[in-house]
Amino acid sequence: DAGVIQSPRHEVTEMGQEVTLRCKPISGHNSLFWYRQTMMRGLELLIYFNNNVPIDDSGMPEDRFSAKMPNASFSTLKIQPSEPRDSAVYFCASSAAFGATQYFGPGTRLLVL
Amino acid sequence: QKEVEQNSGPLSVPEGAIASLNCTYSDRVSQSFFWYRQYSGKSPELIMSIYSNGDKEDGRFTAQLNKASQYVSLLIRDSQPSDSATYLCAAPLSTGANSKLTFGKGITLSVRP
Image (cartoon, rainbow over the protein chains, first blue to last red):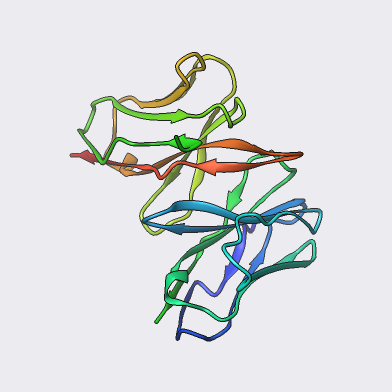
């Protein structure tokens, strides 16, 4: 079975550029989560969706970050404009239901120069 | 106090020893706890969950929950070099009508052959 799929796996961009991260959750899973991991702050939840609807975006650092889930099999996290402090590993996770075990994707390593 | 704290580490133990990983939590989190393992450069994976006071055993792993003292531990018996990883403690944090999984910063375990 395919797990959570994320693309790209690595992204290097320059400050000010737009960055779009993509996620395909496990088929049949109803909840999707976007996390950011850095050495300083650890693993932080940015936003999560339940049945494609954003439930809690209080972890989104600022207006430069936005996330969408147009259907049950696809979600994007966009940063516009990007800044060096956005450099981190961004994980997408999905679960069969809210509160159930979360399965993480391989992550996208973002470096903003 | 942060909602979920892992203050000790990194931890180094010889092969075959017992590794003890600790996590404390605040009153704000719900009474269910999860231990994730994250190998270097990989994504977190769930290895144990515990909901009730006391011990829960799964192979070489034992999770211990002490609600009175507000800590949860993970014991790894007969530690193997393959156990070398970062271990993340997580618990749901209530946010009004919803909750979100909150992670500690993790403890890095190194098992010496």
